[in-house]
Length: 388
Length: 157
Image (tube, rainbow over the protein chains, first blue to last red):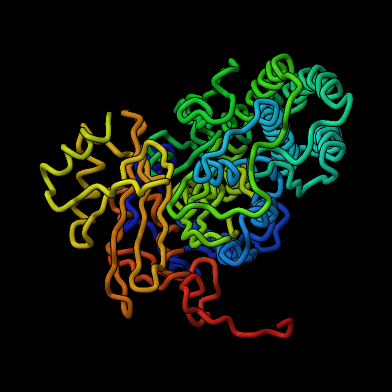
């Protein structure tokens, strides 16, 4: 039998991982988890081989939601691509828009008006809270707690979506952050509504702690399960809360600041062991930090322009650019190569969900079948981004 | 560390690795762009990761570009200890049977991204332990991200 904690301390060389299993090993069982399993959060299939109750090999099988976004982008103009980015990580479309615009703005070398940058920061952090609310709710369901879902998903996230709807007319695919600024200024009284929401959200975050975080049934299922050391996480390219839970203080907002993040003060919650519970806890703490950022942004924002000087029809000078930011799921980047034509020559997405998911091949090994869902859920993937 | 130092450290071991100058009118970040010959990639990757002065311990992403005459693979490296970044570019002249060595031995995070390159560009990753299509079905014909790919018309076309 494999000792799980020992196994996940070191990086298993790729050659020692197994290739895709299609049948049961000599001694053991073959389990096909998904693609239509309620806990896979979409259409993901994991081919698992087991020996008794212990997982001996796992290979995620992806591609069920592949829509060829990178190829589609080669046939569209730069502003048209923003709507494609909405559909990648559909739980965090604002940050997708923003990351793409950062890359194009870098290539165009345009200045962003200050108010637009503050609005981006406010919606970006609201989006992070909304996305983490989905995680908190669905992770509770994965473990067997149904009630937190109605609180985080049905109550707080819904309020954020209402705010977004008032701001840009859409609830999921916003197309709000545009190249050079934002689509429109906030409507009258919107910022006050955000202020009220922020105040109430602090109380809601404490409520999640009471309901779920320190719930003994929940901690029993998650603490000490799916341990990922920071070496393993870094080697596999894991970013975002998953990496920070392993004790690494890595955040694009600090390491490679963008927007107006240098003007606000906030902490980066980190974990120690990198188990499922800490990956969850990091996200709950991040909600509070995002609230702090929004409060400061609301205090600093001044009236002004919301769109920079960008021509209606423009061509990006030949060359290449890379823009990235801290999306709720990690380091989301867009690598664009322009040949001077109205559409990009090459458009590559550094999708955090896709890259975070590969670690599952190593992470699941040695744990019990009952822990598979707890570990898979704690990685927090969105299949729209995995398959692109 | 500054880009000059990265270059000096690397060129001491690999004199044939050259920086790619920034084209006029283009804005870039603070990354160093390096032109790595195909034959040198495997060795260079190892040095970039293990040399304490370079310590590129994080491979952010790997991708490929079809330049019509040749292919190119791009590796975006980050050092979390020194906080510097580098972009490696490897030119693959052979267009009929393009091949590039794997870097999964050095950075496991290249695993799926290299499979994606094989899947969408048809660049064979030599030495990869599990080179199968990842996003497309196993029986898909052709490599869609190539510029000369002609999509099979379906009932909507």
